[in-house]
Amino acid sequence: MSAVNDSVLSDEELKIFKAIEKNDCVLLKTLLTDQKNVNIVDENSMTPLQHAAYKGNAEIVQMLLDQGANVNLCEHQHKYTALHFAGLSGNVDCCIYLLLAGAKSDVTNSVGRTPSQMAAFVGHHNCVATINNYVPKENVDIFTIATDGKDTELPAFIADSFHKFIMQVNIHPVKVVLNIHNYVGLGEHLPECKKVLELMCEKEMKKGAENNETMAFKFHYLSYVVGEIIKIKQKQTTNKTDDEKKLDITELFTRKILKPGRQGVLEFMEGFIKDCVREFPFRESNLFRQIVASLTGDNPAGALNVLSAAINGQRGFIDNASMCSTCGEEKAPKKCSKCKVVQYCDRNCQRLHWHWHKKACAKLAQNPEYLDKTTPDTNEISSELQNFLINSEK
Ligand SMILES: [Zn+2]
Ligand SMILES: [Zn+2]
Image (cartoon, rainbow, N blue to C red; front, top):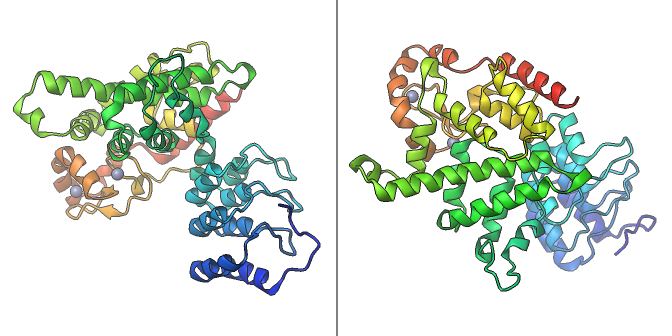
């Protein structure tokens, strides 16, 4: 299918562009039943898909992809692809749908920028991380194929869950464990997941010039968290204290990881992440050395932030105040109704944190400033991260 660059658009085709401009999904759906070819371009040489991506309308993006929109079609005079536009829009779902449909992430526009670089340019760091963390589905599916009469490494029915799991951007350990719980089938196949993550880590480091240290490290990190859950599960079946019997794995893990130490620093979390780094098998890699240097130096940002910067790239500003106190998700919408200081994604995140938060809640209600003493200063974080990234570019 080729674009009709020089031909005049029909009335019906013009209506498609209008419906996208107005985010009118219902009208667009009717229009698309008659218009089979959506690989058309307007006077700016932009396709309907590029417009929808630029608007950040994920529903319309998916609708057009289902209708056969060519995800990499690019006639735009400055060579922006749909993924470039999605990165500019800041809509993470748009980026994911385009990537799943085969959008190329290494194409450059007329000023030599990739989609993730354009997203970074306008400060959409979640899009940057989403694009950089993307893994082609084939890289997972390969582990569901049996070779030489051996069993498959990964059961085929969990391949989709596993694929989504490894592409998640929020690497807070509690979030990782919540994901394991939420993605169908992972919780029942933890040893297989761990094994495949180890294999994927190794693969990323054995591609010669194309080694991807970042993804290798991420896979190692995820396998380490999965390993921890396996250990907790084993312990739970052998020595069941009454307290442990009542709690689910997520709750046991969250209590451990969020236990506040001196001045509110999460010491267990710090230790957990440092142990994970220490076990990274590719110690000669630049990324490993940089992470170790950042963790052993004066480190006001905390181990999780160092790791996050290493995996997801630099963040200009981190808004601690809107982060979920349990899982680190940004823009958490719910506030604790008692102290109105800490925030959560939902009731489940609040429930998981209550064991520790109940001790601080009353104090916070009287004096909201109390929280400031227990969380690192955002300016310190961003300068620490900048140092880290400057050093890692050397
Ligand atoms: Zn949360
Ligand atoms: Zn509270």
